[in-house]
Length: 112
Length: 305
Length: 159
Image 1: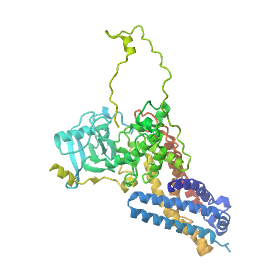
Image 2: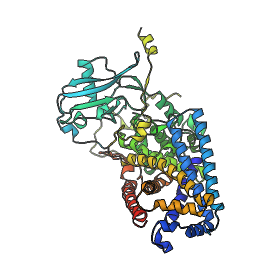
Image 3: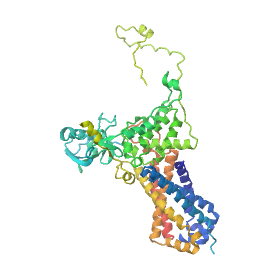
Image 4: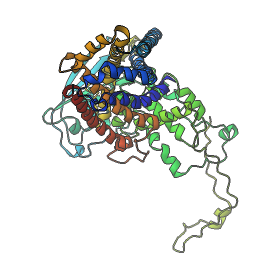
């Protein structure tokens, strides 16, 4: 089941990550430089209107990354204890990173 | 494996230094031993090992049987590449610039002694995937009446994968098999796909359920080294991708076996006997009329299960 | 005596382990750029997990510390310095991992691009090497370098 989700998240990431990268092109926002596309006004507009997409991106990316690294570590060594250890670390890291991602979207205030 | 077709026509450098990685199971010592041998045109690595064993060092241990790439016993690692010793020309492996050969036992296997490797795990994994057709018609399976139908197109779906000689080169080159002991390996998974693609097999639910375990094809990451080293061009990499795709479809509940072939119904009426052409001559003393009435019975012992 | 000796002996495990999955020189296989792609996919994947962890923590700044801290942080990406160089390397890893990932989705998820099974004939080139996934692999190598250069243009010359 996890390996099936790995492919599904990969498919979703193709669209979500390309969107995430394309919105950093300066011409789209009518500014000069790459750094100016990350000014507080533009970022606040993005986070407040596409917040759900950003949380979905964080969920998908964190799952794909953590699950990929988990599979890699389980391949390198056998043993029950090693499996439990890797799985526990993966679940904890997944929850922490996802909570930080949700807080990024929820906790933002308008720039004043 | 793409062979160097002109290697056998070249004259190999002579003499050649052969470095063999040896292992003594009693003392546990591992060492590289160098031998110098004289070569001739068309000499293979197996010939070189045999000449060392007969002339220089009779304690050198290796496994071989047919000398012509059919039995799959003589898999060794030559200059870092898993190869069949009997199919590797010395002219291909050693050049006049560096007249050296490094021969090691197969990677990812347990070494019994010198170049002889232990295939217990390999055959256990092959046994795990049930390398036989599974049928639901038990009476027909126990007491077969007629053959199952299969078209040439259906045969070509799995024919290539049935050429496997179980030499273990694919498992030796696989980077996942190198570290993960539970992974079934390219050979076993290819054979699993060979029986899944066979229309005579009905056990696809059982096979796919069992494959969705620790050794599943999801652990394959398509490094495709197995296909690159396979001496019979079985293409394990392609088979494992097809198997994984079938398994994904099965998990999404959309897998359907294309066709399960049934027993060919018996012929309704006997076909007319083709008459002998006029130029055909008979052996003296043969009565063709009598033979047609009473066909000769050739005794064949039935296979017992 | 010989029977006893056989039982005294121990087998040597010849598994390559980490060496085989990271180094393509441990097992030398001819005609196999897929193995290079596998190693690069794995290394860029490890790199990207690190990058994503840092990225999620750093993009949390507006919610955690306010917009002044965010502006200060973003300005470090302008010009050529250690932060923007590391960011550029992570973007290269992302370009290769995603473009090669699309190829792997086609090959592994849909079993496309690996040819049809055939009757082997000399010189025994397997069908999966003759399928279009091999061309896709070369395209993935080329395209990821082009995309990387484009990203470098956006980061450094527009930054």
